[in-house]
Length: 441
Image 1 (cartoon, rainbow, N blue to C red):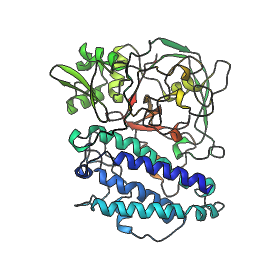
Image 2: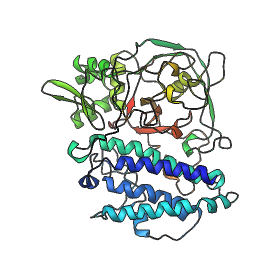
Image 3: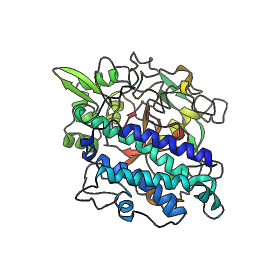
Image 4: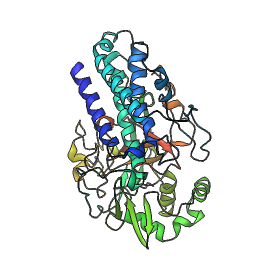
């Protein structure tokens, strides 16, 4: 156990450090997304989370820096429409500590966490979070999820505040695969996971729930940028009849006339990646990254709707002969040739690039290249229990009817999170997610 846990921790820390290394020193106090803290907070938050749950929680050790533990314990989670209303109300310091101070705290925590592995294992019979190393898995997955959300911030950061890495892979350009509707017959699905058989899962993944899904049709591939551009240039993006009333109100308040990742300069449409601006014509085959509100509007324009979480699961994991697959492509592991995830390209690829990743029904790209919006409000499954004693609000704080389930994975989603029961969630009007969509009927 010790070697495996240590390797997972070190791998996660290495990638976090890689992401932070792209920032110039003056960027650490910047908030490129106003709904989030500055970067320096996350430098401290990741080790603080590890200390609070492993050393301070499972092992009940006294803190060596309680003020920093408290300062970095939890970020802000504001309502998009009313940023003054937060799910948590942390005391934001008037001045953040110097970066060197936060880095020294990070390094001390990392060393203590590595030294704690055997001690946690000894408590396995007394603490469910120590059993099977769950607390380490939780800390690693928490860090992996933040790596992706940090890249949302990096993408919105001004170019002069970040450095384009020399190792960045070349962009994969080209046309999207042809789209066609796929008929999915009615059938039974199993959402969620069994606590005793899944090595680690977040509270919203449990317990399992069985449901009957009526027959429906779904696009074979997600909507690409070129298709969404047709929607924008047709004028439908600017018509209220295309949008739900609350979505239209948000669009007007935000002053949007195109997706967050696009901009128009000298009459030319451009697409923002983490480190570059590319002509939209060059990346027309990439998936359209949009908010749920924009995805709903496009789907209505096409005479369709977005799939539910249950429909996504049926399209991804169901089989004509009954039963369900572990992954759309049947195999038991998220192999590299099956999708664009785990930072393999550091950017999207043309929609439908992975022909060998299709589900049993012939639906492509259900995992990777972008999370997929569903129109299912985020909530617990029947029998939900906030089993992580020291983190009871992880999911429950967001059972508010404003957050919606996303499934699959993006290019910035680590392999560890690519499992059928994993559920991501964001507010319908949050536009910064690496999230695509497809239509259903």
